[in-house]
Image 1 (cartoon, rainbow, N blue to C red):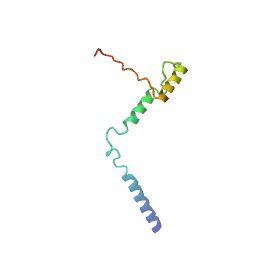
Image 2: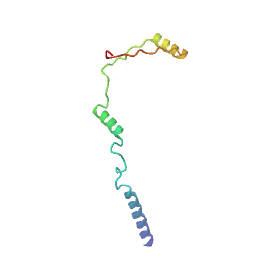
Image 3: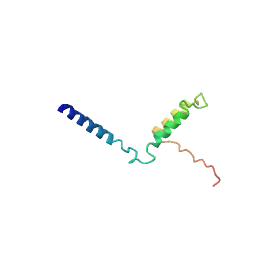
Length: 88
């Protein structure tokens, strides 16, 4: 009978210790905690299999890609020009 009482006391103490962690789990966290995860879940829920309208991938020119790689390796990269949308 004494062993049963000790086991009950240990089990009750363990249950109280486990439940103490459930008092207020959101309190120390900021209100925007895990917003990225929530927004990703919302985005995938709206359309989980989103596809682009275009089914065919755009073609690429192998010679042009090889020339760009050679310029990169030689340190002669062509710097893109700045595109402007205004008149200034």
